[in-house]
Structure formats: structure tokens, C-alpha cells
Amino acid sequence: MCADHCKGQHAQKMALLIRSSSIHAAGCYTTTPIAKGQRVAEYTGHPMTKRQADKAYEASALTYLFGLGDGKIVIDGHATAMFINHSCAANCETRELRGHVWIVALRDIAAGEEITYDYCLYDGGEDEAHCNCGAASCRGTMYSPEEVVSRVKAARKG
Image 1 (cartoon, helix red, strand yellow):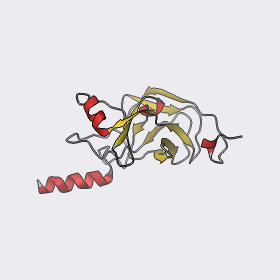
Image 2 (cartoon, rainbow, N blue to C red):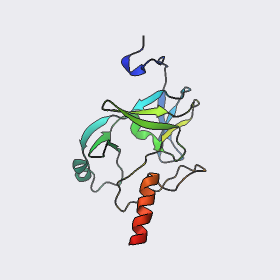
Image 3 (cartoon, rainbow, N blue to C red):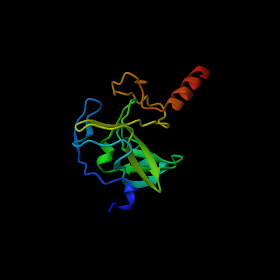
């Protein structure tokens, strides 16, 4: 019988591994096929306020922070999901469900494929957050399409 997190789906054994990625340093790959709609991983780690995270990582260029809801609380990632890279043509998306952040397959994913999701960054100050996904639809940044429009409007005013 499936655990509560399966929500009616049959549990499927899946293995994820971390290895070098052409997108950025290390990436997360599946060793088994993943069906569309299946939960791939949970983004876990220590929750903290955005203010605490800003202070803790003030001098760090690299973080694994995931903003929840309105972004006032973040998860400081410390598990497999922290290695999932951004792509503008992602094969997964994130979903917040009852206080948990799940990475869920947007389509069927083949064994050996790198797991990706669109980071949709929205708060990075002056950082340009360049994207290296290489997708035909790449927007050149990890910022959300809405944030890109906002930044363009702000640049025109300035």
C-alpha cells in the first residue's frame, strides 16, 4: 500500500545521483525512468527568515536557498534536491504542499537524464543570475519572466 505522499499513485523505485553537469558544476540525474506527475525529490533543509539568510550568506556567492510562499521564509537546502540545476526548458517544477517543497516531473523523464526546474528567481539585488541551461528557449537568466520584465522597466526609468 502506498504511503500518504503517493496520493493514489503507485510507488515507483527511483534512484537519483549527483555528478558533473554541463549546466553548472554538479547536477542531479535519475537512473530510472520517471513518469509525468511523479514526485522526484523533496527540497529539505533548515528553514530561516530571509533576513537570517541574508545575514548568514552576506559574503557568499553560492547558496542553496529556496523561498517559500511570499519569500519571507527560506529553506537552506541540505539534501539531494539542492543539486537540481535551473533550466528555462525544465523537466520538473516545484510545488509547495502542506509545508513541503516537492520537485515534480512535468513530463516523462528518461533514465540518465538530468533533473531540472525553472528557479524563477525574484530577489537578487544587482546579481544578473546568468543562465547556462543551453535550451533553445533560454532567456539568459534564472530570474522569472515577471522579474525580467520588472528589471527592464526599472532600467528604462533609471
